[in-house]
Structure formats: C-alpha cells, structure tokens
Image 1 (spheres, rainbow, N blue to C red):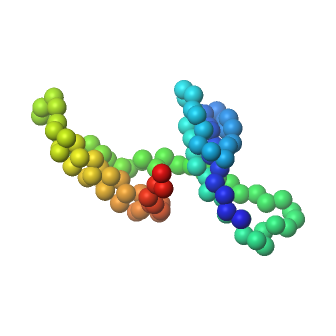
Image 2 (cartoon, one colour):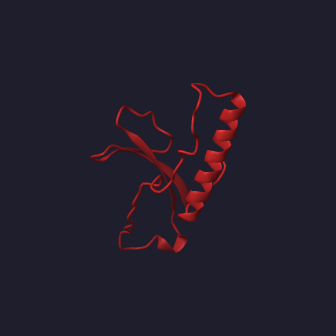
Image 3 (cartoon, one colour):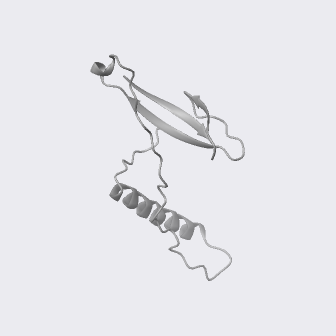
Length: 104
C-alpha cells in the first residue's frame, strides 16, 4: 500500500493530517509524508514507525551572488536561479535525499 499524507505542523504540535495540500495559517508548515506499507506488515501487533524531520537547509550556502547594482536583469535572475537550484539539488543528494520533478 502506498499513499501520501500532508501534516500541518506548528512549533508545538501536529495540527492536522490531510490527503491534499492544506491551506496554511501563520506559523504553520506543511510536511509531505510518503507512506509505504509492505503487504506482509498487516499483522498484529500494532505497527510503530518514527518520523523525524531535520533541517534540510543546514550546511547549504546559497549566498553565491554579490550585488553591485540595485537591480538585476531577467537573464541574470535566470542564471542565479539555475545555479542555486543546481547547488541545492547536489547538496540534498549528498545528504541522501531523492530529488524528483514536480508533477504539477
């Protein structure tokens, strides 16, 4: 069985769990959880699994641009975005994350 759930969390607790991306209020964050349960796991006793979310940004430096003018061109913005995305993807892969394209 495979499914996706979205947890709406604050610094204090899990506020709610939904099947669709939720609308967020101030101070709320969404966590996507991909759930996979092996067929032979549907037995007694009750299953328990811990989910730990760490700071995936830790150790990622995106301050790669020195701005000398109060504006940038669209071409510069595109180049900066592409460089940052590539650096972020590489850093996350090194930390063991799997990167996929958004289907939307």
